[in-house]
Length: 354
Image (cartoon, rainbow, N blue to C red; front, side):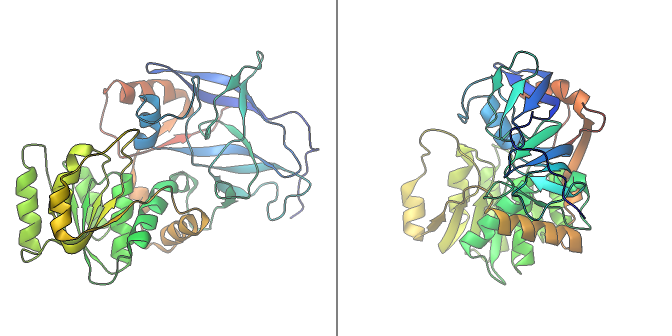
């Protein structure tokens, strides 16, 4: 297939983006990307994936990604519609998954938007190389499922960094998308996995991913869950405990679920500032602690999508909401203000967007 080439320095692509203002105000806006340079590709979005944890940590101030107005989102799929003169490996018409958008500004006024990631937009221009670039979407992976590529890669990276092996007992606290990614990655390594989450729909998906048992929990029953885990592990505790909620109050319970010389994995994002835990509980167990960060980059995204394509990880099961881009302001407002139904995985369809 021949490559389409847009002259470097040309005008950017025009489209639509979700723009977030302070205090939970969301709107759709007409935007323009950066020009498509000689090292860039221009992409028309198919789907973008919503990261409930990270995005709303940014939107509520738990994480600082810079000033508002901001366009969030850091994972999407789309079709290449222009290719820079020095770019190899991509052709016009290719379906890709990508992790960033170089820059966006409001159409008409030229006002720059904070585009720390910026994939919740109908258009993107980016250098496809580097850790957060773009790759071809594998055959056998649907574009909506592929737009949630980061979460299973995050989970798999944590499993790999912690060195989970065959026969290990793994407890996963929090069965959102990151925790479910851990479940799938650990099961594929041959581990015996126990999942903990108050939501029955999340526990059901964990079972489909291969968890041998799941437990429910709430703030009043934490000690019961510790006892349950000890009972399932002959009183020893788990070889690995992945704390995947990012909630400070879950850390001490997770430490108590670890066996002596076990491993506690800080798989959640705990935000700015300090995190405290009961030192002696970790100390007397002589625990190893692991701190994964990001998604492990290209190798882990590739491995995750290969698992999807082969059927080893039915990642489409995590998608509970498929919405049109036109629904995004209300959808984001409901999550920000704690309204609406529970969300596990949400993806945005950009069909029809300018």
